[in-house]
Amino acid sequence: MTKTRTQQKYSEEKILEILNLIEGGKSVSEVGRTYGISTKTIYFWRNKYSGMQPDEMKRLKYLEDENARLKKLVADMALDNAMLKDALGKRPKAERSSASRW
Image (tube, rainbow, N blue to C red; front, side, top):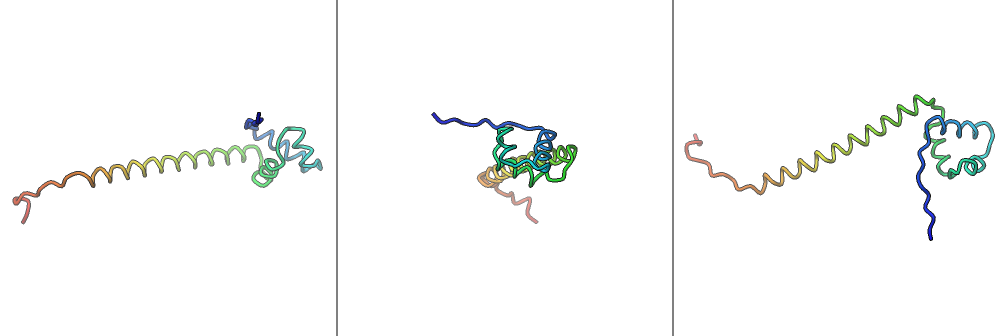
């Protein structure tokens, strides 16, 4: 039986606490074992959040979420647009009456 790890969300404060432990001299592997976090995740956090305050981290998260939402919205609208163009292209063209010509 394969053991799967569930993804856990950490608050901005907890991430900063973990990063401060590393900056304070603890090893990444030691902190990872203590908190049950992979070293890869800790290095990712260190690269992404280095030098940020909790409010800056929240702002970054908000902007990332907003960006993802807008990208999804654009993709949905592009799909709708393509479907409408396809529907218009398959519609039989109306005969022009001679009265509409000059």
